Image 1 (cartoon, rainbow, N blue to C red):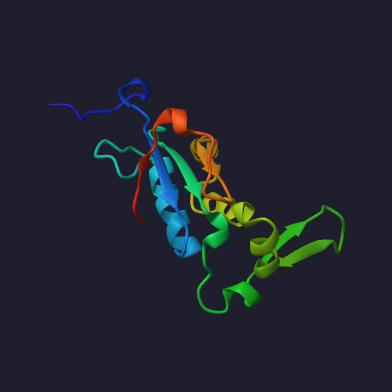
Image 2: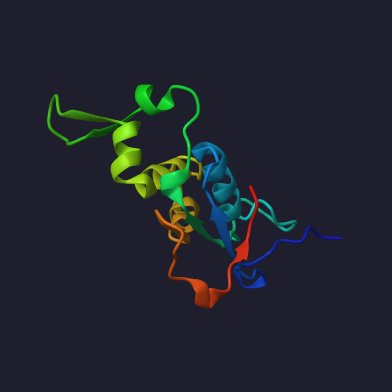
Length: 142
């Protein structure tokens, strides 16, 4: 008896929609990362890209618990010496809440070719409207 090894053509990709209104940003991002990788499927293997498409709506209404809104920073470096830029999360959530959600999900998927491919299936929207109703996404409760 041999071990079953699923191939790319063995998977069918579904579309899920997650509503982030009133939910912690990290909990929503963690569930989105699980769906993007396909870890919720019974035939998951880490070396095959078997994840689904994920739409996250109402990112502007996601909450950061505790004092993260004022004490958590996003750092980026310009490439020049001494040019480390930092932005507090209250400013990010006010101006670009979808970026904060994308960052959280990006840090929860592996930094490999499979993880980068999985991030292309993530769609993030600040409000309740999305442009993927033709794909008939299923509502996923977090």
